[in-house]
Image 1 (cartoon, rainbow, N blue to C red):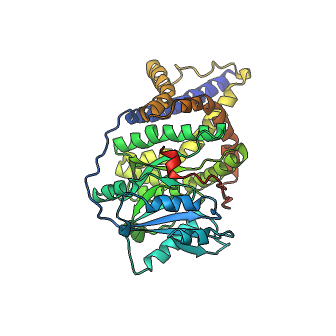
Image 2 (cartoon, rainbow, N blue to C red):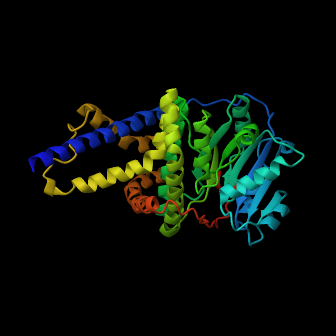
Image 3 (cartoon, rainbow, N blue to C red):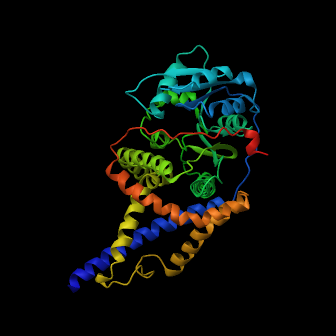
Length: 412
């Protein structure tokens, strides 16, 4: 029995050491988000844009977005708006045309989902007489900051090929669910995205508010038709040494699910897609990172592995909560890391969300969302477990949008 106890203690020490190293790494990287160097826009409009809006039965929200896009601070003749009316059974296409956008209707029930819709739209776009320097992608429920195309033009002129804009919520205070989403995004924008941008590491794509150089799309193809097409395309770029970058100075707002049921359905789709993409790409990204000694690729592999890492931590925590093993729980000494670093990084970890909200000047009532995060995290656990065993289910589930908010209401 004593030998078994020693084996279990050894495994526990090895596991806690791994968790400690990974957690400390993430905390240290996040600290780079404490600093922000505002990037000046130095290039006048040069690039032309095809603005793609993914839409499936979005008649309730499509008009405010199109009107918003038509008023961006960019020469109107240098960008066109295309609404991908993907298997719509309502009047989304009609509304899009009425408001001056190109309504591109697609009917293919065998290939459902945003990724397939974008792939179809790009094939049609390349066949048009007029070509564009870059493609910008939004969802139908979005609203966009006025300077968006100017910032993207500037980044492209400076050599960026894939750019993600700041993702915000247009309904953060509708419910405890929307506030939890908002706080998560505020934290991620600052302490994950900006931090990695500051360190020269690859950023993740958020499915909307992104810009991709047309030549890159033609060179490597879209090829992202999973439930998380954004993660799949970003991973394919990183695999080739092309790092998506971050634009903290321009925002895109989207509508978050109000109730728990809709939220869990959306997040289940995200997790199923994440596991699917991780299973197909994590090996090659990790291999390339090790062979080429590229920290950015290793960091991307870490992101792909993150849901599995959370599951491992959760399962081990449950296991070692059992007193029957009579092993001292979560000993700080049981790790290769010094005690001061464990306690120090833990303290910083809990301070970072508060600092993220303060540094990005979030309204004070947004801070209440920090109290909700532990409960919101608990709702993630069954999703992560169920998604792991259902990752082969790649059936797209649509999130309904109903809030026809205009840009003036957000920026007042």
